Image 1 (cartoon, rainbow, N blue to C red):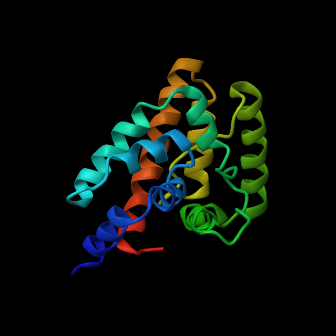
Image 2 (cartoon, one colour; image 1 turned 60 degrees about the horizontal axis):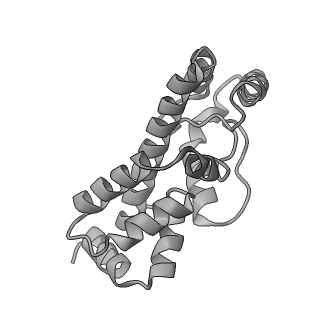
Length: 173
Protein backbone atom coordinates (compact mmCIF):
# COMPACT_ATOMS: atom_id res chain seq x y z
CA UNK A 1 0.00 0.00 0.00
CA UNK A 2 1.54 3.36 -0.99
CA UNK A 3 2.59 5.62 1.89
CA UNK A 4 -0.17 8.16 1.22
CA UNK A 5 -2.93 5.54 1.29
CA UNK A 6 -1.50 3.89 4.39
CA UNK A 7 -1.19 7.25 6.19
CA UNK A 8 -4.70 8.20 5.10
CA UNK A 9 -6.08 4.87 6.35
CA UNK A 10 -4.37 5.40 9.72
CA UNK A 11 -5.69 8.98 9.87
CA UNK A 12 -9.22 7.80 9.04
CA UNK A 13 -9.05 5.14 11.76
CA UNK A 14 -7.48 7.33 14.46
CA UNK A 15 -9.56 8.48 17.45
CA UNK A 16 -10.99 11.98 16.90
CA UNK A 17 -8.62 13.61 19.39
CA UNK A 18 -5.56 12.13 17.72
CA UNK A 19 -6.77 13.10 14.24
CA UNK A 20 -7.43 16.65 15.41
CA UNK A 21 -3.96 16.87 16.98
CA UNK A 22 -2.37 15.79 13.69
CA UNK A 23 -4.47 18.33 11.79
CA UNK A 24 -3.46 21.15 14.16
CA UNK A 25 0.15 20.60 13.04
CA UNK A 26 -1.08 21.57 9.57
CA UNK A 27 -3.38 24.42 10.66
CA UNK A 28 -3.46 25.34 14.34
CA UNK A 29 -7.13 26.32 14.35
CA UNK A 30 -9.24 24.14 16.65
CA UNK A 31 -12.28 24.76 14.43
CA UNK A 32 -10.36 23.67 11.32
CA UNK A 33 -9.12 20.47 12.98
CA UNK A 34 -12.56 19.58 14.33
CA UNK A 35 -14.29 20.15 10.99
CA UNK A 36 -11.79 18.15 8.93
CA UNK A 37 -11.62 15.30 11.47
CA UNK A 38 -15.42 15.13 11.57
CA UNK A 39 -15.50 14.60 7.78
CA UNK A 40 -13.63 11.31 7.97
CA UNK A 41 -13.28 8.85 6.40
CA UNK A 42 -11.67 10.27 3.27
CA UNK A 43 -11.35 8.00 0.25
CA UNK A 44 -8.23 9.65 -1.08
CA UNK A 45 -5.83 12.52 -0.57
CA UNK A 46 -7.76 14.73 -2.99
CA UNK A 47 -10.89 14.38 -0.85
CA UNK A 48 -8.98 15.27 2.31
CA UNK A 49 -7.37 18.28 0.61
CA UNK A 50 -10.73 19.50 -0.68
CA UNK A 51 -12.26 19.18 2.80
CA UNK A 52 -9.29 21.04 4.30
CA UNK A 53 -9.58 23.84 1.74
CA UNK A 54 -13.30 24.20 2.49
CA UNK A 55 -12.67 24.15 6.25
CA UNK A 56 -9.91 26.75 5.98
CA UNK A 57 -12.12 28.95 3.81
CA UNK A 58 -14.96 28.76 6.32
CA UNK A 59 -12.88 29.87 9.32
CA UNK A 60 -14.14 32.89 11.22
CA UNK A 61 -11.47 35.56 11.66
CA UNK A 62 -10.81 34.64 15.35
CA UNK A 63 -10.11 31.07 14.16
CA UNK A 64 -7.64 32.42 11.58
CA UNK A 65 -5.95 34.41 14.35
CA UNK A 66 -5.71 31.22 16.42
CA UNK A 67 -3.92 29.55 13.51
CA UNK A 68 -1.63 32.56 13.01
CA UNK A 69 -0.54 32.45 16.65
CA UNK A 70 1.25 29.16 15.96
CA UNK A 71 3.37 30.61 13.12
CA UNK A 72 6.79 32.12 13.76
CA UNK A 73 7.76 35.44 12.26
CA UNK A 74 9.38 35.21 8.85
CA UNK A 75 13.14 35.26 9.39
CA UNK A 76 13.01 33.94 12.96
CA UNK A 77 14.11 30.39 13.58
CA UNK A 78 11.11 28.43 14.89
CA UNK A 79 11.80 26.88 18.28
CA UNK A 80 10.67 23.50 19.49
CA UNK A 81 11.02 19.90 18.56
CA UNK A 82 7.50 19.20 17.31
CA UNK A 83 6.38 18.46 13.77
CA UNK A 84 5.00 21.97 13.21
CA UNK A 85 8.28 23.63 14.27
CA UNK A 86 10.28 21.28 12.04
CA UNK A 87 8.02 22.05 9.09
CA UNK A 88 8.34 25.80 9.74
CA UNK A 89 12.14 25.51 9.74
CA UNK A 90 11.95 23.62 6.43
CA UNK A 91 9.54 26.13 4.92
CA UNK A 92 11.72 29.09 5.88
CA UNK A 93 14.99 27.50 4.78
CA UNK A 94 15.35 30.04 1.96
CA UNK A 95 15.51 33.00 4.36
CA UNK A 96 19.17 32.51 5.24
CA UNK A 97 20.41 33.83 1.88
CA UNK A 98 23.69 35.58 1.13
CA UNK A 99 23.39 38.94 2.93
CA UNK A 100 22.08 37.27 6.11
CA UNK A 101 22.41 40.11 8.64
CA UNK A 102 21.01 42.93 6.50
CA UNK A 103 18.17 40.77 5.22
CA UNK A 104 17.28 39.50 8.68
CA UNK A 105 17.29 43.08 10.02
CA UNK A 106 15.02 44.21 7.16
CA UNK A 107 12.67 41.27 7.76
CA UNK A 108 12.57 42.04 11.50
CA UNK A 109 11.72 45.69 10.77
CA UNK A 110 9.11 44.64 8.21
CA UNK A 111 7.57 42.19 10.68
CA UNK A 112 7.30 44.97 13.31
CA UNK A 113 5.67 47.35 10.81
CA UNK A 114 3.26 44.65 9.63
CA UNK A 115 2.24 43.65 13.16
CA UNK A 116 1.73 47.30 14.12
CA UNK A 117 -0.47 47.81 11.05
CA UNK A 118 -2.51 44.59 11.09
CA UNK A 119 -2.22 43.29 14.67
CA UNK A 120 -0.94 39.80 13.84
CA UNK A 121 2.07 37.98 12.46
CA UNK A 122 2.85 38.32 8.74
CA UNK A 123 1.97 34.99 7.13
CA UNK A 124 3.31 33.87 3.80
CA UNK A 125 3.87 30.43 2.32
CA UNK A 126 7.67 30.58 2.38
CA UNK A 127 8.33 27.24 0.70
CA UNK A 128 10.64 27.75 -2.26
CA UNK A 129 11.08 31.49 -1.68
CA UNK A 130 14.32 33.26 -0.83
CA UNK A 131 14.66 35.93 1.80
CA UNK A 132 14.62 38.80 -0.69
CA UNK A 133 11.35 37.52 -2.21
CA UNK A 134 9.79 37.17 1.23
CA UNK A 135 10.81 40.70 2.12
CA UNK A 136 9.44 42.08 -1.16
CA UNK A 137 6.10 40.37 -0.56
CA UNK A 138 5.97 41.67 3.01
CA UNK A 139 6.60 45.23 1.85
CA UNK A 140 3.99 44.91 -0.89
CA UNK A 141 1.37 43.59 1.52
CA UNK A 142 1.96 46.47 3.91
CA UNK A 143 0.08 48.54 1.31
CA UNK A 144 -3.05 46.39 1.55
CA UNK A 145 -6.20 47.58 3.27
CA UNK A 146 -7.61 45.36 6.04
CA UNK A 147 -10.03 43.46 3.79
CA UNK A 148 -7.47 42.74 1.09
CA UNK A 149 -4.90 41.67 3.66
CA UNK A 150 -7.30 39.30 5.38
CA UNK A 151 -7.95 37.67 2.01
CA UNK A 152 -4.19 37.38 1.43
CA UNK A 153 -3.70 35.82 4.88
CA UNK A 154 -6.46 33.29 4.23
CA UNK A 155 -4.88 32.36 0.89
CA UNK A 156 -1.43 31.91 2.42
CA UNK A 157 -2.84 29.88 5.32
CA UNK A 158 -4.61 27.59 2.84
CA UNK A 159 -1.36 27.07 0.85
CA UNK A 160 0.63 26.24 3.98
CA UNK A 161 -2.09 23.91 5.25
CA UNK A 162 -2.23 22.07 1.93
CA UNK A 163 1.56 21.57 1.83
CA UNK A 164 1.60 20.30 5.40
CA UNK A 165 -1.31 17.93 4.83
CA UNK A 166 0.53 16.42 1.88
CA UNK A 167 3.59 15.97 4.12
CA UNK A 168 1.42 14.46 6.85
CA UNK A 169 -0.11 11.96 4.46
CA UNK A 170 3.05 11.27 2.47
CA UNK A 171 5.39 10.94 5.39
CA UNK A 172 7.65 13.66 3.96
CA UNK A 173 8.54 15.31 7.27
